[in-house]
Amino acid sequence: MTPAAATTSAASSTLTRVLLGLITTVFVVSVSARALIGSDDAASSPATPPAGSSAFLPGMTPTGDAKSAEETGMALESLLPVLTEASFFALVGFGLGYAGKKVAKLLLIFLALGFLLVQGLGYAEVVTVDWSKLVELLNTWILNVKEGQQVTEWLTSSLPTAGALIAGVVLGFRKG
Image (cartoon, rainbow, N blue to C red; front, top):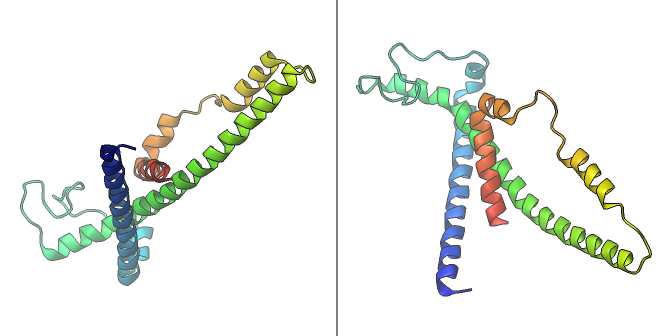
């Protein structure tokens, strides 16, 4: 490994640790805040934002005027479920990505060894393999997409959760 690649790898590892620490902190703080203020009652009845508020920027009105502290607190309270869910799924995604990469490496090793075994047995004329039947079975088992099911519909309906999960999987996969 070249010194430049080692520096890049160390920086990437540090960035991963910082992001994972930040996600964990957001999760712990949002769960703690929800427990302290009892937002489970607020989560069961959907909160309506005050008139003239912006859903994207909870601390500001559309004209840019600062809201009162009470209105800002209410807006932040309404964001807690989203922060909790997104950070939780980012952590779950990280775990899935990390473990998935480790399992994928093992599976690829066993797949390669199995392929070599089949090729060796075929070369020694111990077995014969119907490769066209194997390709047909793999296409049926692996590339099976159900009619009417589209990934884009699922992603758009739960974009924050799916986005956090995918980001966590990518981060975990890179780290693993």
